[in-house]
Figure: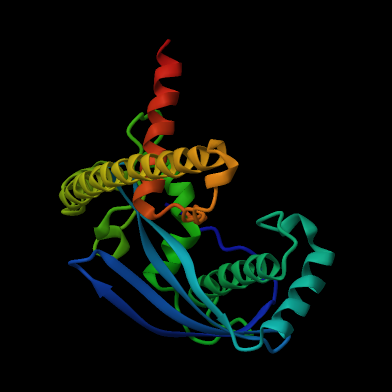
Length: 275
């Protein structure tokens, strides 16, 4: 796949690659970085693999920016507000909270830092280059979606990146589509996802069963209390010297009861839809 070298926005003064951590068993990989932008803001962040799937069907991996930690959030926020006032079309979200603004601006800085690393490789004599070449994770982060448009073109079975591509053991491009999809279908995460989803489903059903029993018991207790109050209030006034029964205590639903109510709502909607 051809790499498009975009013109620099001159937003990042320096980026430092702090290392990679990869776990082949849990299938998790991340690159750690540190950058300084043109306003002097300092930012730590990671590019990390995320597992993708639908239900118990594992579909592959994507690369996302995570653990974004500015050393001075207020200073970074001020830079974000200034930048988006001049470039409102570059907002990734529509949220106007401080967190959303910082997150959107950090994504622009991270993307720019990755693009700068490619410029260092292609134009090594350019001014402001720090001698750092792109990491595999940066490459995937920048070009994964254009690649995924190819890998999933005219296909019903959506796939993402393979573990081999995440770890740099395989490249990505037109000639890698078949092998990538095969690697994803053979990934041990397929079995793990099915096992975990099945185990979760069984535990959830057990929880809902406990919740249903708890709700039935609560309803029975509430009925008995109500009946006792009625008897007292309809008794003769001369003998109404009995102390009041225990008042019903206001209660909240526990997790089991919440799951029972959710299951009831789901089943009810399914019955309505089936009519």
